[in-house]
Image (cartoon, rainbow, N blue to C red; front, side, top):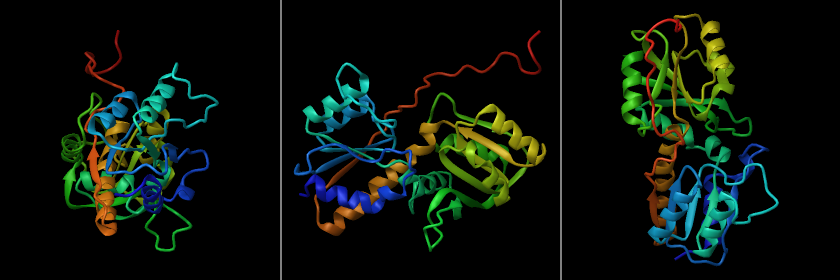
Amino acid sequence: MPVLSEVIIALDTLWPPDTAEGWDAVGTVCGDPTTQVNGVLLAVDPVAEIAEEAIALGVQLLITHHPLYLRGTTSVAADTFKGRVVHTLIRNDVALYVAHTNADRADPGVSDALAGALGLRVTGPLVPDPNDPAGRRGLGRVCALDEPLSLAEFAERAAARLPATAQGVRVAGDPQRPIRTVAVCGGSGDSLFADVRAAGVDAYLTADLRHHPASEAREHAGRSGLALLDAAHWATEWPWCEQAAAQLDEVSDRHGWDLRTHVSHRVTDPWISHRPSLVTSGAPN
C-alpha cells in the first residue's frame, strides 16, 4: 500500500503542476504525506457532498478537477463552506489533490475525455503547448467524426452521451448542416474562438458560452458557418474523472499497489432545473 507522498509523485507525473496556468491553484491542498492510501475518489468539484462521499467510501485521497481555493485565502476557519470542507477532510484523514489547467493541457487531458465521450477521433490540440515537441499537449482538441452527422443529430448525440444536467445542450446553427469536424474544449471555452476559426472546423462544443462572444463568433463565420454547442460546464469535464481513474489503475498495476479508484456520479452542477421559454418566436409584446 503506497503512502500519500508516493501517490502524489505519480499524480504530478500524469498532470505536471508546472504546466498549469500561472493564475491556477493545483496540487496538494491538505493531507499527511505519510498516510497510507488504499482508496481514491475522483470528482469535478471539491464541495461538501463530495467530501462526505469520500468519507463514506473510506478513501484516503480525494482528487478534484476544480480547485478549492482558486484565489488564495488567509484562513481555513470552519465558519465558511470551504473551511468546513478542509476541516471535514482533515478530521477524517482524507487528503485533497487538485488537477485543473494542468489536466486540461495533459496528454491525455480533459478535452480528450470529452472527445471520447462524444465518439470523436482526436486529430490534435486546438491550442498546442509550445513546450511540447510531440505536439500532443495543449488546450482543447480538434476532432473528426468517422461518419458525417447533421448538426441536429450531433446535438442529440451530445445530449445523450454527456451526463444529464438541467441545462442540457444549447445549439446555434442550421440543424441540417453536415458536421464532419468538431473542436471541443472541456469547461469554459469562449476565449478560444480565434483558434476555433483558425482550425476551420464545422462545429465547436464547449461550456459557458456568453452572449457576446457567441454572437460575434456566429456573425464572423456567417449564419451558415460555425455551429455552436454549449453544454453544462460540469458535464463537459466529468468524463475526465473516468479517464483519470483508468490512468490511476494503470499506475497502481505498474507499481504493484492495491489502490481502489472510485468516480463520483453525484451531479454537482449548480443548476437544478430548466424551464423552456413560453414565447416561441420574437420578443414578448
